[in-house]
Image (cartoon, one colour):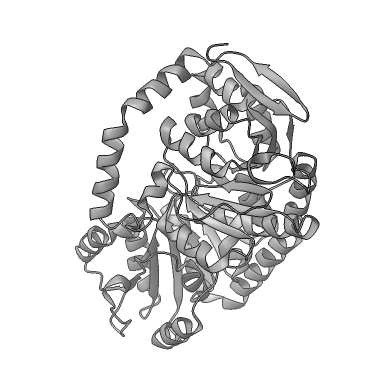
Length: 450
């Protein structure tokens, strides 16, 4: 049966429709791109964007032994997805202590985080790039008993490779924006085939569930957003104390996860606020810290005094903006200020996760584009723990009010934190959905019965 796929469903097999022309073409193009991918990895090594000791993991080569126990594979893109896996690993381990877990992500920061946070029954590897040979090598070695892909990591070779190896898949914490749904609709037969390879789709919200169903997902439920259950981001207490002492009693706010264009907006807002708060400090944490030098150049042209964390600069009395251009320190950044602006919301990125700031006692502000986290943003605004503004002027006016009335700001932060705490239990619901798909307790390597 050329180009057909067998998927395990309990003790039976289902024959799915042949792969679409688009997917066959994609696989052939990806297979022929091996030399270019190797060149890309070498370039990223030179740029310091890959771990030299582990870069071969991205070509499917393992760096650790496979546990001799039932293995559940969890895959997500980066830090946020990795953090959302931790409560799920905990709840699954409580019910099935015989399970072991393989966590894959794609970024250095997430790998560092997992080295610190994963329990003893879990290990981390970098995910293979979406090349058919790399994916085959990964599955041949690890052959997990169940794969759980987090959010929207719909890589064709990864998904089809799992199906080729008869590894059941679940798409968990699935999120699909209206824009992404329209994009996938242009290749409807291909996305329908890929979604059809998932035994189960667990959506974050009703709208995502409706969009995924319209594109071809079969068994869809809505247990909620796993990120609601994530633990607060950590911070080094010594760093909190040291930087906090440098800030002293100055009024302060954080602009987090900003994108190109938003840093200049933050600079203009800072200049406007400084007319009323002469000793104001703005902490700016760009989404991509490598952009630090260009951000310094842009803001300095406005006459703004910058202290750059990556350069080891201290905050002084003349510092206007503290540029936190480092990786993995958002727990520290949110812990330094009672107010957090969430970036990606004044450009059409769709915003970033506001829950992390809410857990760390921040009153939250974001712009008009929060479609990637629409439900979380709505819950926080409904509870008056966050406020959405439509313009730069509204942002300046709101921040001025919050800085003038710290008691109001503190009460907003309390409401936001309570809202997040009241929305927990998602990991438990997802676990109940996964239980019927877990391997029997006596399964061993390769999914074969003992």
